[in-house]
Amino acid sequence: HLQDTTTLHNGVNMPWLGLGVFKVEEGAELIQAIKSAIRHGYRSIDTAAIYENETGVGQAIQEALQENSLSREELFVTSKVWTADMGYEETIAAYETSLAKLGLEYLDLYLIHWPVKGKYKESWRALETLYKEGRVKAIGVSNFQIHHLEDVLKDAEIKPMVNQVELHPYLNQQELLDFCKEQGIQLEAWSPLMQGQLFDQPVLKQIAVKHDKSVAQVIVRWDLQRGIITIPKSTKEHRIVENVDVFDFKLSDEDMTLINSLNQDQRVGPDPDHFD
Ligand code: NAD
Image (cartoon, rainbow, N blue to C red; front, side):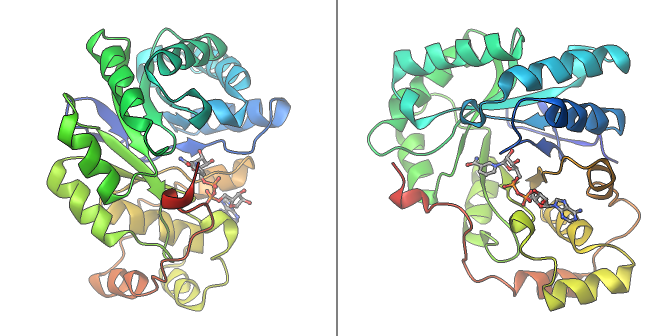
C-alpha cells in the first residue's frame, strides 16, 4: 500500500514511497505535482534547500492538507542542509530558514545533503541538537559512503536514521545496503529511475512485459523488495500515479537476481568522495 511505512530506529514511521521534487522550479507545475501526488495517496515529499523550491513546496502542502482534510502529522516532509551551510551554527540557521520557507513548525526528516570533507561532523552535531530539542522528528545523511558513516558513528550521540543515496539498477549499492541494515540505518534511493536512462534497458523491459508493468514500476518494486525507501520524481499526474501502482505484483527471486546483476557502479550524479 502506498501509505505503508517503515519504522526508523527511533520509532518514527516513514513512508516507503515519496515524491522527489529535484529540479522542479517554483510555480504552477510544482504546486500541481505535489497536490496531485497527495490527492493520489502519497504522504512523503522530498525537497532540499538547494532545490530552491521550499516556498512552493510549503504552499502546495498547505493547500493539499486543506483540500484532502489531512493533518500535518499525516505528511512526511524531508529537506536537506546544503554544503554551503556546513558547521554547527550554520546548520541550525539553515534549518530555521528551511522551516520558514516551508511554513512548517517541524520537519519529519532533515539530512546532511553531501559529506563535505572535514565539515559534516559539526553539522551532524547541529542535527543532534535539533533532534534532542524535539524540533525535528528524525535526522539523517545523504550521499554517505560506508567510510563516512563509520566516521560519523565514531563520535555520534545519535545514529543517523536514514542515508539517502543514488541507487538504481546500474548502481545497486549492495555493500552499503548490507552495512546500513547491520547498523539499523534505513537506506533511501535517489534517482531511482536513473533520471529516465533505464527505460530501454532490455532485461528491465523483459521483466516489465512479463508482469504487464512498466520499467519504472519494476524498479520501484525492486527497491521496495530490497527494503529501500524510494522517491521517484515526476510532475506528470499519470506518471505520479503509475510510479506507485506497484502493489498488485511481486518480482520473483529470479527477477530480483537478474536486476541485481545489472549493476555497473555507474552514477548519474557526483561521486561523494570527490564532491565539495
Ligand atoms: P528519477 O530517477 O526519479 O527520474 C526522474 C525522471 O524520470 C523524471 O524527470 C521523468 O523525466 C522521468 N520519469 C519519471 N517517472 C517516469 C515514468 N513513469 N515514465 C517515464 N519517465 C518517467 O530522478 P531524480 O529526480 O534525480 O531523483 C528523484 C528524487 O531524488 C529527486 O527529485 C530528489 O528529491 C532526490 N534526489 C536527491 C539527491 C541527493 O543528493 N540527495 C540527488 C538527486 C535527487
